[in-house]
Image (cartoon, rainbow, N blue to C red):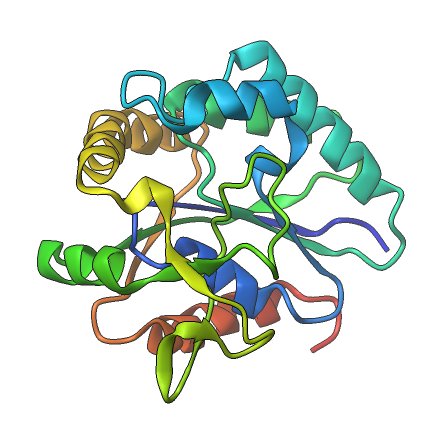
Length: 227
């Protein structure tokens, strides 16, 4: 089965991008791309705790990661959709992604999605979300995937009963840096997609992420090979 659809999701920190890809990516034929899972560990370590270097990854590393990933997806007979969690992060990465996709035949449709919500909700989500070091074996001990706490204990993981921790990148200093980085990059990302004649779908997650998931699902289903 050919890769039919690539959905880049970008937006400010705590808008719900990772949760969306986790939920929507469970369906058969869908794959989730997270850049940090495809770059050397030493690169992640160098950018994890510094507000100046936060999330910065060399363009050559990004392009190699994209090309290797999509080659693997092209060889996967079951894959028809790729959800890109928090990617692209810059206008350069838009061009890299679309140039890499042009190397494959048949071409994939690209449906870019910008996830957003109000500043109060962003701050509240960042303060409340937690991660589980036991469930997510992150290569640099900096897990990112939101964990679900037990109903009777917000610091216990409902999946493994392990202790939950605040996400490192949600500390006030790093959250400000991440938010500023997005604000600085957002206009360039939108412009780059427009230059490639790709429209961006705005997805508001203010009410609930579940509600946003229901809004995005029809787009994915409409492009699915199985109606």
